[in-house]
Length: 350
Ligand code: SF4
Image (cartoon, rainbow, N blue to C red; front, side):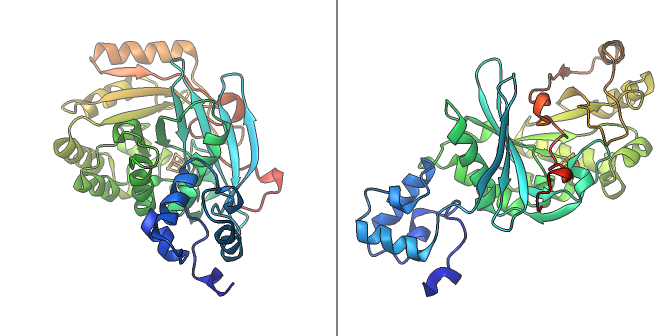
């Protein structure tokens, strides 16, 4: 029982050798067996049936469970998207979403922080402020909970849930290595996307690590003054500092990022905004992803009209900007981009 203080709350994120060492396993290969159960989503030592019974009983004494979080809520909408509220060991709650696209591709959208310090004014999570960072294990556990309700393997991961992944970069990178590991989920790095609001040191760090994941950069406006009003992060790293970092990222690792442009009715959809955007992306090998803003009652924006979006697209065509239009999945359960936030009125302790 004394060991309880020295062992971690979660075994997710640890390799087989570390598991064997931490749990003082009498045989090293037990560590591998436990690791294999964990990636199958089996977290109760009772159910790890290839371990000797006495060992299973001992492990239950040492550690209540191999997983530190539980599913608090789970709802699925008509698009097949499932949003979960995950209760962490300290009672705080984060959200994650399983998305299924038209081709049947299953994607896990994961949170990296409880809340977020970045304060983007179009984002529900931004209204919460930052409560804390998630550990590597807590990030991986979200995937495990989603896997339990998925009828197929989850082959893609996007770090687009609550929080700014590059503000909690070490656990995020460790979780990516875990997902990529052949012995665990063997997910290709190219099927993993990190979304950032433009944390320049984080982008440079990713470039330095030469990790071939995809990067999605939320721009929202290519006009410095307007962007600062919408996204406070622009005060620290403005659009030119961001562009410089993106050029380095591209130079080091090839074409691996998209510009996310959230369309806000009457704010960033006029001719001037299109021209600014065209000038900004000139010289970058990049695709601009247009995303109509997802409604959130408490925020001071509106979704653009179809005519407004069409007119903006015509301007981009005129300037020969390479863009795509993204359809929001998960909107029915507030699980689309910028919509993740635990409703305060649910009385959850986050
Ligand atoms: Fe944070 Fe992303 Fe929301 Fe900005 S958009 S406040 S970075 S979660």
